[in-house]
Each structure stands twice: as structure tokens, then as C-alpha cells.
Image (cartoon, rainbow, N blue to C red; front, top):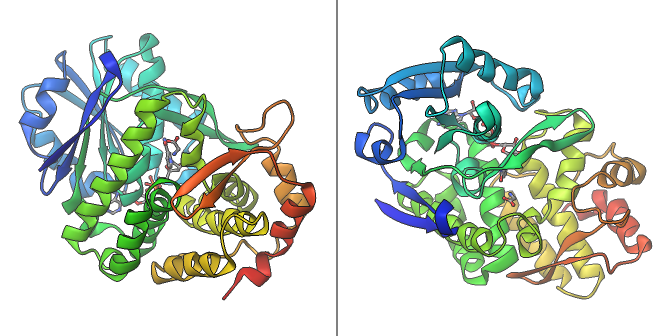
Length: 362
Ligand code: NAD
Ligand code: GLY
């Protein structure tokens, strides 16, 4: 097992990465201060892993709430089901919430923990590749609004993250691929060596090779932890973690939550951001094509939905959280392995990228 640390002074916490971790009492116990535990999971993950997690928690009074599965349920109504369960079972301020599932469960459980009785502890047990490499680390929690992704939420850090690589074996291929999009993101924005490693190991990664998966999770979490430690509440550098997301969130919202997976939308969004970086002279067109073929090797989409118009994108991108004083800011590449947050581009260049959607296909 590897242990990494997210270094945030008195809110620092460990990330445990390894095989067969979710039934290990000693990983949970130091991070549970009271006697009550509420496991939050969903209808897909519960039959697979709930009993294993419960077997690690026999010293506690454990309750569970099993939510409907899907991005379309990541909203305030579903959040209320968590509060209902906590109140019905009389959970007090010393309770600990455990998020057992992918990013949807992690984001909702974290947000519930941030506001239940003004804040209780929570532990992340991410069960998708995407949640192990990204959403479980760094304390961003939220639910969606019909007008925009993750618009209602809080920064709230977990007490620990338990990333069990063996649970990824039951993940459908499409979900594994979606997670790979966020892995590729780290290579692009801050780690050229990692990007080169991914170019060598993509087939192994996309076919569930456990050693390669473990390495990808570790390298991704190292990069994410470093960025979060520097800028927890996204005053600056943390925005680079949203590379591809301004375009991607527009796709997710336009198509209806859950139609395009988050990682799929991010993949197409990263190609759009790379295309724009090329138009601004920062990277070569060959590098944009290289990114497209890397994503294709992971069975990810590389172009936005054909029916989305420039205006669809512009309307949705205007409510992005990076918009400042009405001005759109984008995360672009200054080179492969380095990102910059900028509003220094012309509307024409943005429109050229949006219009290029069809032509981005190889
Ligand atoms: P998800 O939570 O919807 O999980 C994907 C699917 O896999 C679901 O059907 C789930 O039930 C199923 N599943 C989970 N674990 C499984 C397993 N081990 N075996 C079989 N099936 C399993 O999606 P996701 O990709 O994990 O997360 C996407 C969400 O994360 C989005 O809402 C996105 O906005 C959010 N996100 C948040 C952050 C952050 O910093 N907080 C970062 C990136 C993404
Ligand atoms: N996934 C973006 C962030 O954590 O900041």
C-alpha cells in the first residue's frame, strides 16, 4: 500500500492506495471519532461493496443510505435523502459519513457532511477510476443545478481517502475510460513525463492492468495533492485542474446530465482547449492530433456533439465558475505538460475552435 498526504496544515489527510483496502478496519478507525457512521452509497455499488466496508466497522453503530445511481440524481432533492437518513437515525455532530462510490456519491456526501449540523467528518472511499484520481481528493463538493454543473457546493476536506484499486475490476469499460480522461489531464497540465508514460502504457491502463492502474492513481494523486496544497480554494493555480472542463461542462449540461459521462465530456473538452492552444501558437497541430489519438486509444470521444452550436457553447460557458467580471477565462496549454489560466484570447479564436468541432476528428 502507498500512502500520500494532502498537505493542508491542520486539515491534512492521507490517501491510501492499494489492493483490497475497503475491509481493513485499521484504515478507517483512526479517522472516526464518534460511535456513529453513515455510509452513503448507491444502488449499483451497494450490492458490490457495502458489506465489505461494513465488515471493517463492526465497532460502530453503522447506518446506510442507498441513493439512486446517476449524475441526473446529483441534485438538492437527492441530497435531502442523506439528511433525512441522518435525522431519522438521530446522528449527532460526532457522526462520520463514508462516501462509498464514484464522484457523484463523493461530491454529494462531502457536501452533506459540510452542512449537516454545520459540519461533520467524512471519509472518501472512491470506487471509480475518476473518483480515485480526482474527485475524492481536494475537498470540492457539490450538487448540480439545472442551469449549471456543480453550482451549489462547498470546499470541505475529507479525513482520509481510501483508494482500493481492486474495486476497479467491476467498473464498466466506459466508466474506466472516463476516468482515464482525468488521468491524461494531469500529464497535459503539469507533468510531461507522466504524459509520456501514458503514451507508452495506454493499452494496459485501458485494459485494467492492476499495476498500471495503481501507478496511474498514485501519479495522479501526487499531482492533484501538490496543486491543492498550494491553492486549496482555487484563488489561482488550482484552476488548471479544470483543463477541458469549461468546454466539457457545457457539453454535459447541454446534453442532459448523465448522457455524456463527465470524463467523456472532459476528453472532448481537452481536445477543444488543445485546439485553441494551437491556434494561439502555444503547441503544434501535431501535438493536438497526438492528444486525440491518445484519447482514442482509451476509447474516449474526441469531438463535441455535432448538434451543439457555437451559441450553445457560448451561452453555457458564460456561467462557468471561472468567469470573472463577465470575462471568460480558460485553462489552455502553454506547452504539453504546462497549463495557463487566461482571458487573453480573441472571441474569433474561441469561435474558430468551437466551429472546428467536426474537423477535429482524425
Ligand atoms: P459516478 O459516480 O456516476 O460513477 C460512475 C458509475 O460507476 C455509476 O453508475 C456508479 O454507480 C458506478 N460504479 C462506481 N463504482 C463502481 C465499481 N467499483 N464497480 C462498478 N460500478 C461502479 O461517476 P464518476 O465518473 O465517478 O464521477 C463523476 C462525477 O464526479 C461528476 O459529477 C463530476 O462532476 C464529479 N467530479 C468532481 C470532482 C471534484 O473535485 N469534486 C472532480 C472530478 C469530477
Ligand atoms: N477537479 C477540479 C479540482 O479539484 O479543482
